[in-house]
Length: 329
Image: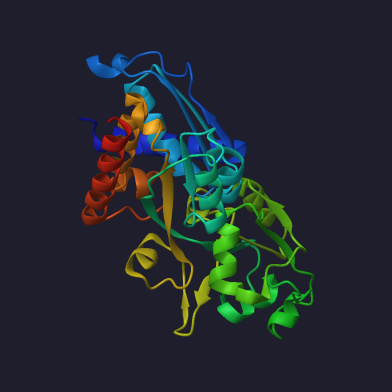
């Protein structure tokens, strides 16, 4: 068993590597691990192809990193395409084994999967605190109400900060946010904007690291993304408290877990294909992923999300085992 010092060092190393792969938006571990773990490690082999949410990407990557260390013959390919981009372009066309999502699958995606004969099971991965960030030099702002946030991001948005609040500077608002293929984009509309819709006057990207870099380089910028990316870069960015009517609440693992951080805390998902679960190495990875959802060191400590409860994990494992049984009949 590793000492606490070793564990801390591993966490720091992993956090640095997660920050790096978050920027790249893709993870391939083929050939990276030369030595297996247990004797059974070499018994599992084959490709595992995963696309979807940029928010779930660092969690899936961290879990896969550990799995690939134990099973070096596994050949994983994880890409950050956005929840919707993953469903429509890869998963529902039968080209990937899993799709990560920061919101539930949508009816049109369900139809596309059905048309292509792709069956799946929905698994809860963690809880996220969707985080609104500004530049750390913006000492004139610490929080926004949900109404003020809507004014900044709605389809017909305010253009300068003093239009949001009189005491804010008369400076143009520069926005960095999720692309419209992103589940984070969809969730932000649902939670904050509603029928007002989302502005097109912003720098849209599927790479959350690009949002972080954009805000870090501009004193009058604002952006939003999953909490993990703020967790990886707390000195480069300033997270705003969100006031949903009971005073500002800052995003954190604690406020997301307690339900206090509203309305921007949300469940995260992954969707394995039932056909893919017919392959033993993919079924074993799916089991391993669900097992890791309660791992506080990994989910909270390394990545920056709220782990699943034991009860949720048991429910997800039951759903998964039913799907595996169906796939392997």
